[in-house]
Image 1: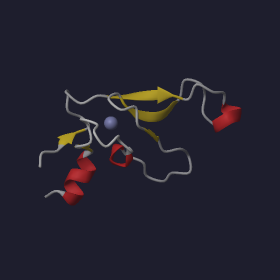
Image 2: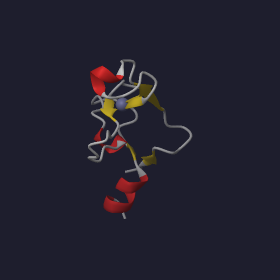
Image 3: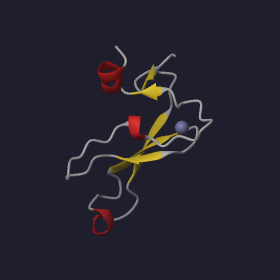
Image 4: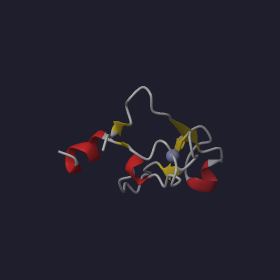
Amino acid sequence: MSLRSFADRETHFRIVPSGSPPSVDGLAITEPKFIECTECEARVRIDGPDGHQTTIDNLPHDRDCPQRDVVSQYYRDQFVR
Ligand SMILES: [Zn+2]
């Protein structure tokens, strides 16, 4: 099993801005809201002020997404060694 890191150059994710005014979600229009997988477009909400931990390890990738194996350094440290 090979795992790639979120920080690896060959992995592809993008930060998606809120796109809606603060009255909708508490975020300015240009404020980062989601991390999105550019392969399958799975999204996960970036932590808001309520502060629960969200990482790319929670991305609900498609079953056949080529980036399913990409995990954060945190995940690697905690579960792989
Ligand atoms: Zn994906």
